[in-house]
View 1 (cartoon, rainbow, N blue to C red):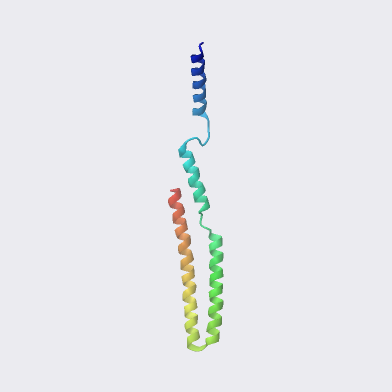
View 2: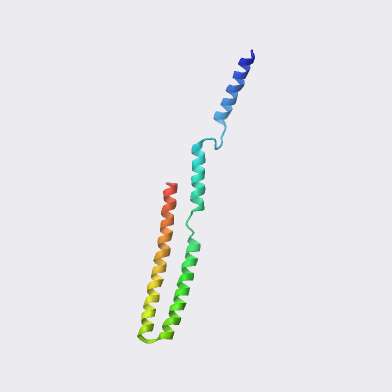
Length: 110
């Protein structure tokens, strides 16, 4: 066996090892891994969104109650209605943000 033949034999064994070796050697595997990491880091945070909604509603409710009680009469009723309207707006806003985050996540994974 000559030196050229032995080098060719080693190269073919090396190539065979690369072809059967498992791992993220292909760019397709890496892109799937990056995509899953991106989707994982951008998952919608339901618990934190719920906590923030509760805090916002609590602050608006207490403020509206204090203002409505201080003013009294028909203007107090208007403050009550505005407080209710703002509360519904807070809920809609936070639900909308969760839906947008879920849609973004499904677009990245699908």
